[in-house]
Image (cartoon, rainbow, N blue to C red; front, side):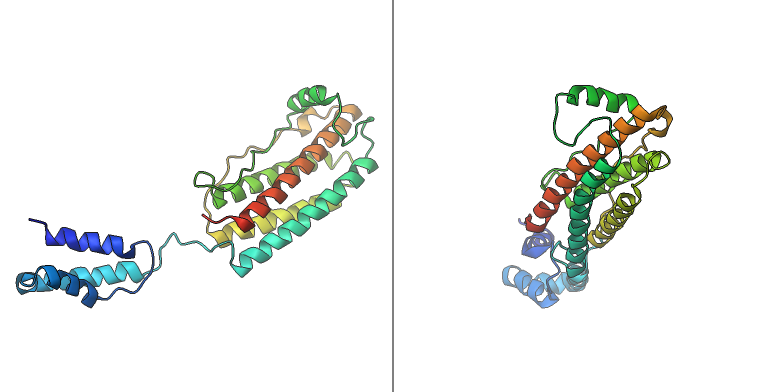
Length: 241
């Protein structure tokens, strides 16, 4: 015979267990009474307790609930991020031009293989890729990678700052951008953290050439990462799970 307690649990779960809808004990009692008229004679108190617990569970907010990307505070922080990223993208060519970079340009060139080898020898690591949101790459994952990537470039510029002038505004903008990403993480309830190890660039800056190449590589990589952030922000604003 079909177990009525199983029926109660099944009904509770299939009704809408993942949402905070109001479910009264009368509804559940009515369903049980329809199929098992004599059930309340011997199980009335137990069922009443089950109903009360069911109402409490379904009506209470989930401890893991998160604000949606449509939340006004979240949208405001995202808008500020986009504004800062656009400003950083505009500042990078100016900084690159101001600092002599041994004939290197921001445009792709045949020197890329050599520059990639230089990046490795100088200890300049690359940020983790930012991917479109999905069931396997969540909002928390995306914001965590943004945060780690920004921190990486902050550390790279900090290592270059004692040797170069003209980096202060860029560093300030990155600091503000990291603040806004952190705010978005807090508003979204995210707790995941991307593994991060600070680069050891300072120990490899032995001369002017290394400094100039490191500056070029840092600015080039930062520009590419900012473009990734722009695309990710656009994806976040339109994503519907």
